[in-house]
Image: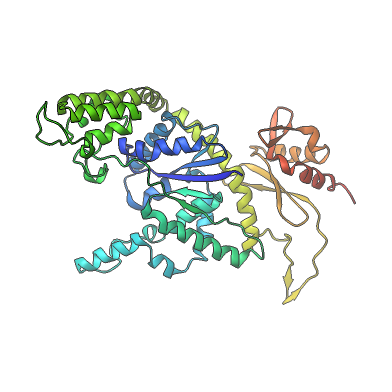
Length: 446
């Protein structure tokens, strides 16, 4: 069974060594495991909550995307996208907002902490609190529920938000599901074994403590300069060191094999000087980072390559989010006039007319022309690729109506591509081919 795992990365800063060892590396390794369908996104809407510097957010989006790609994220295997490129996410966020009790948001840890701080200062409880901070858990729920993630890797401070996402999903399912659950119940995935690296002063490596070691920025020189500032005790060369409680040893262990770290520990306990130990640590880190740093520099010099990757990821994500949002719109009553809902006039429910499959044309958010194939029950069966010309979209509909999909299509990796000449008209899951072909076949029947 495939497990969908979703990871968001807030775009408010530049990744450092602790981010790589504690989040980036383990997430990339996990994404390569059999049976894992991994989604990674740049949480740039979330960044607006705590950062009002447009240049910083723009730069961070570029740096973080380049970092993940350079670190080995397989963008062909995973779905890698920007949150802001998926318009269905804020739309779902609003739907979820409308079923979420304010009392639930009142209990969110981040909001309560802000209120407590204000009370301690003697100012208004909500001083400085914007609606982004207050309703942050709902946007997080939309991120997760949009793609029905089964597991979400989080720190322990985020477990409450996962519980809120489950609560919100249950409310929506109960209110609109009518026996059908639109959302699966996501689970928090907390890995206590993931490395938490010490910073230059021994505390957790964090930008807020100004104790970080740069990952790629500034190159080897900046990394080495930071390592040389790591605080050590006063033991001289030749004196045995307490390796287990040494920040140097903890960092070395994060970038070495068990055999290598055991040897380094033995050398420290045998009197290795701190200066030489820092040199060894620099060499060990550089051995891991150098190839990735080279790829990072190449990406930063050609941002259009990053943009191409993100746009491809957005297209991949929207093939799911667009179809799912059409179902959710139908569920909450945001249907096209004359849709499959029973029309009401003067308080009298009119008898529903027998329905059959049909094509519906529309213009998407980007101004492109698309069409949907709706089944007799009003459910979306397929969503077309975008067309710049409405006549081309119309020709594609006619092409589908007059030909068998099985003759026009080809299958690769469980996805069917339907073509008109050299152009792809639409894509959908291979399991849906027979249902869609049958629906199209009924369109010309009396």
